[in-house]
Length: 107
Length: 121
Image (tube, rainbow over all chains, first blue to last red; front, side, top):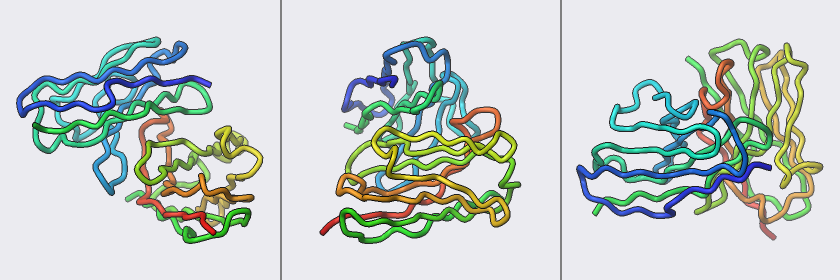
């Protein structure tokens, strides 16, 4: 199985800050990586697919990069609405696997 | 409009069985793959099971944690996906989400609102 290692587990930053979350796969997953945002009690929302493609209606302050085993999600200017937990997920091969999540808090 | 509505969750004793349903509408069900994910209270997301479309032979995949206990199936005439869960464990306690992966990219698509399963004695 492909292990997804996400860091940091928690992140506290101020409005307007640039923040970056990283995700490492235990083997190459090409660009078959997604990033989700989940707020408490809500269904996960897709932000990025194919490592760097912004899903419809997702604000442009979100961006993804990487391929192979190293990936990142960046928020260019953190907003209060971005307080949530973020997950990476590989869908290159079964079993599909997720990172452990990164909880983003606003200072 | 695509809709996925899960049902069948509830409280069940360890060792018992339960079947979740995902009633769909707004698309040609038989043409699309379906999948189940889950999230234990306060924990991260976990993929559970996948079934390919009728066109691709309804092939099934399972997470190791449920393989041999859970069975994913589909009724193409009714537009319903199922997750039959046997020999339930307390670790199976979670909100279960039905999803419809996009034809061109499996991470895209639609999620249902989820149904909560509690396995407890």
